[in-house]
Image: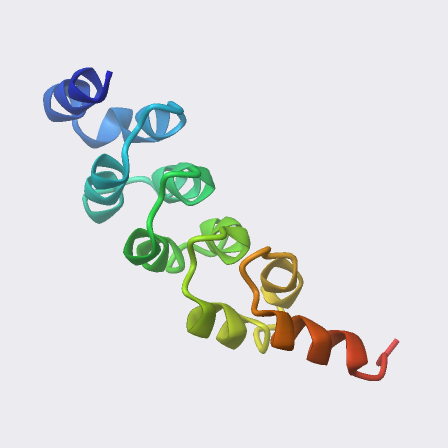
Length: 116
């Protein structure tokens, strides 16, 4: 299946990237290739949602204002980036929901006094 997806990406290019990125069999290398060569913002969103997306690809997705929400929730996002996103008012909630957030950071978030 991966070879077929690569062939489709090569034949049709960026116009098909978003739909290819929704395929559960899409591998991390193809997802990275599509994020690097994307011409539509929707591609970043689909790539950021895919469970096979690796860390360096998620960093590419952080440049899109909507895809960054999914990237912040993705368990493959590096912990140091994830912790930094906790300070972004638009992404803090998404980063805090990430299961890869270090336990110590989760505990400190819980211990903070509520501002509401």
